[in-house]
Amino acid sequence: DAGITQSPRHKVTETGTPVTLRCHQTENHRYMYWYRQDPGHGLRLIHYSYGVKDTDKGEVSDGYSVSRSKTEDFLLTLESATSSQTSVYFCAISDRAIQETQYFGPGTRLLVL
Amino acid sequence: SQKIEQNSEALNIQEGKTATLTCNYTNYSPAYLQWYRQDPGRGPVFLLLIRENEKEKRKERLKVTFDTTLKQSLFHITASQPADSATYLCALDMDSNYQLIWGAGTKLIIKP
Image (tube, rainbow over all chains, first blue to last red; front, side):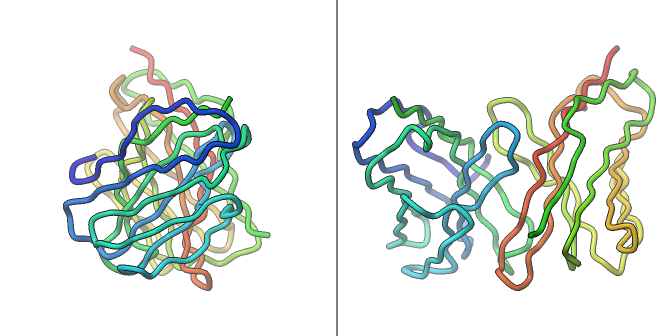
């Protein structure tokens, strides 16, 4: 987890409220990713970024938005949280091509009631 | 659609034996495959990457094979130790979409 922090680490919120998760890196890596991990599923990509202000959708982007205004920060926003968004969220970074080795943060556990 | 299969049941291995985990995929021809380790409550940690033109790769007690004909990768841990107990994930590149797709992981338990 060195060089990558996520905040908050745990959050409980109510359906319909907006939620923002933050990923911060000190590695100066170009690529950043947001995944969700649910039991029985592999990691599923929500959004990714290939540079400041450059982002794209992943496999499960509905209901999520992202922003990257600085190299080191990548924000994930749930516009209006739903119970189906209860999950563990991981941020990851990589230095070279987007498919290369990824380094993960410690995760954020989100519970939507 | 692309699909990756890893053993969903936990794999129990006696300490000192070789643990072998399987990653099978369908409907795709990846350029490379990666293996990660994940401990409870933590993010995945990269272990090994193997490319399509490599049959085998080693790192200390770890060995990965990649058979593009069988569409399968095997991950071996030799002389296994209780500290090797974790969930192991495989991931493939999706070259056309610049994304990785991930297996759900296999939980490995090494018993003393």
